[in-house]
Structure formats: structure tokens, C-alpha cells
Length: 520
Figure 1 (cartoon, rainbow, N blue to C red):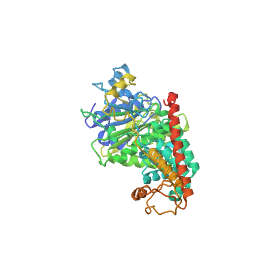
Figure 2: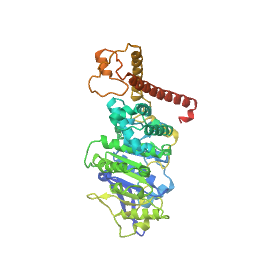
Figure 3: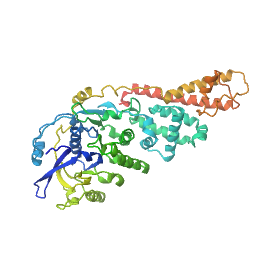
Figure 4: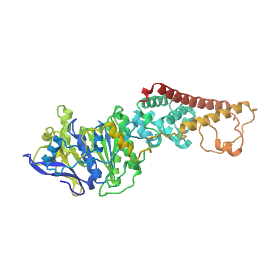
């Protein structure tokens, strides 16, 4: 049943239930993306598991999210259970060999795998706005914040960096608005409140360094198999917007960093996006367009994206059109929307004269699916009613002890497990504010003299912090200009702003130290 250059999905049946033929996914079309759909309990997770096994054995790295916790079993040897042996016999899978696969466990919270982080800068204002469900005005303020950070040399790495910058923007809104466009203090305050909510939901664990390197989810083993990166998402699903935004960020990073490879013999990476409906729920048009663009173009970089969801209507039509490999498990058709979903799913397949797709979809058994993959020159195959093969790895979760053993021998052990907090916007703003305060105090004590032009030209500066480069070059201490009173007000405001931020961070850390459950 196993063929070179193909992944065995299962065996299709004729109308009289006799064996028809094996159904395969050709590796050379693995980067043409795919869709796995079906109602709860129909076998989507097992289908994801057997595809991940197939890609791994073919030397293709895999990234997938473990939403329910049972996908972790892919890292352990399968067990000869009666119903699995019966399915293997039904489809003519002989021999039915068991196998364990090379797995790397990841977890945003660092509890069930290696920590996964990115920086605020890498996330960017668009995805950050999506994460916070920001309004257009708030998104505009975020774009200005990133612009100020870029021009002012202020690295945005974690949440406290962005909070400190927003505090500074709020206190100096009038001056900054003249340079970058209108900055509403109300919008700044709303963003700060949303950041607080994100922090309470665990987003503080996600932003920081060391940031994830894309190459670490694209590893292969010494025996040529692709490593399967499994993201623990059971706790992450308590914040579905963070889950969807993280996966979209990872997909965007792959798109931006990987080189063009055209049409390779097999994918460079396969990416499974489970619970895909969370990505598109209430998504603004610009975000959906971004996803469509990434899905359309990432194929030429050797990455295959497979969306896993309950209903084909969960995926926008523009994205759905890019998905060439389809595996449709059973759907229920009780409500008008569900009936529409059945018709939509049936219409996307290349018809089979032996049966009516719409009728069959509602009557498929567990572990049974309608399968159509790309073949020949890239055209979809005729849809077949297929019994999906049983997995070679364990069907069910690993124990905590088994998971820890896998983590202990992981190839990325020690690379991401410790936090690294280098000087960034938070620390730099604090230092600049302290220096500004010293200069203001010295200016108040100095004898009032006519202001001297030490601006050094039109070089860009942050309001309230003077021109440090010009002062250092001249070796002179800054003197108050004709608008000295205004300068002192801005300096004092900036200092108070950063002081409040520092106090807030320290206070929050103390509270969490006393009430440790808040951190968990």
C-alpha cells in the first residue's frame, strides 16, 4: 500500500463496500495546501496525525498545534488495539507497523514544552491591532508608535517596552502630533487598557527574547526524517485571539524569511492550522487579504498550509480556492447553515458518478472521509469515499513523564528556556528621562543667559530629550532656550511618565510574587 513519493491516506471503497484502491497525497503537490474538515468526533485529528507521520517519514518537517492534548501521542510507539487492527485489515494495510516519531514540544507558557516567543517589533502593528481588536484610530496610534520607535532607535521587545513608549506618547501627544500626525490621548489610554488585558491573559509570556528562529521548526533528524513540532495549545485556546494571531505571525515569518524555491519534489515544511475558524472570525478585510496573499505566495517557498476546521464555510472563499488537497469528514445538516455547508463542501469536489457527495457527507462514519488530492499535472482527482488508515504512532496523549523525557533530549533544549532581557525601549526611555531631569535641574541652578543654538541642524530628536549628540560633540552642558519653561514641563512629564511605568511594573511583580497563582 505504501508508494515512493506519496503519502498513503487510506483505501477507497466501491458502492458495494468492496475495496477500490489506495488514496494518496503526492509529495510534489504537498505545498499546494489543503483542507481537513468535519464535525466534532469524526476523525479530523487522526487524519492530521497520519498526514504528519507521512510527511515526517518523507523528510519533511511539520508544525502543528495540539488543541485537545491528544496529538502528543505522535511521539510514542503505537499500540496494537483491536479497532486499529480491524481498520488495517479492512483497508488491506499489511504489514501494519508501529512507529514513534521525532517530536519537539513547544508551549507559549513554557509548561509543556520549550518557550515560544517573538518581539513586539516582529509582530508589527497590523497583527498587534488584530490581537487587541483595535479600532482604526487605535491602529493609527500603534503605527505611529512603531514609527517613533524606529526613528528614535527604541527596540520594542516586550510589553513593558510598548507600555513605556505609549506613556511617553500620551504625555507628549501635542509635540509628537506635529511630527507624526494626530495622537489621541483617549486612543493611547484604550491601547494601554487592552495591553493590560493581554498581559493578564498570558501574552506577556509570548513577547520577549530569545525569539523563535524559523530554522528550529524546520529540522530533520540524522536518519532523514522531518521533526514534528507540536505546540501545546490546550491552555492557549482559553485566549483564542492570541492563538490565531500567534499562528498567523508564524505563517507570516515563514513567508518573509524563506527563499523562493519554485516547485520542489517535496515541501520544505508543512504547517497545520487547527481550529482555523478562529483566524477568520470577525477578521477585518485587510487581515483576510493578508492571509490570502500569504497562502497564495508561500507555495513557491516550499511551504504547505493545511487548514483544519469543522465547517468549510469557516474559510473565506478566496482562501478556500487556494486549497488543492481536500479531506472531508462527516458533517451534520440540521440547521440551514449546516445544510449550506454540506452543499458547499460537495460542490468543491470533482464529482464521482458512483455516488452523490451531498448525500454521502452526512452519512460518513468515524474515520471515514471523502478524499480528493491533486494528481497528474496538478488537477484534482475524482472524489472517493475513503476509510482513513490507522496511525503508526500512539492514538492518545503522552503522560507528563513521557513528555518531559522528550523535552529533555530535544535538539533545542536550553535555547529558549531562559528569559533574556536586554536594554530596549523601556530601559532607554528611563535613562533618557533621568538624563533630562539632571539637565533640567542644572539649568534651573545656572545663571540665566541668552539661548545658544546647539541643535546641530535638523537631526531628528525625541521631544523633551534635547540633542544628545550635539551636546556630546561640543562638550557643553545644555542651556535653557527662550522656551525654557515649556522644555522643563516636557522633561518633567517624560520623567513622571517613565517613573509611573517603572512603579507599575515593580508593583505588579511584587503582587505576583505574593500571589503566585496570578502568574500561573
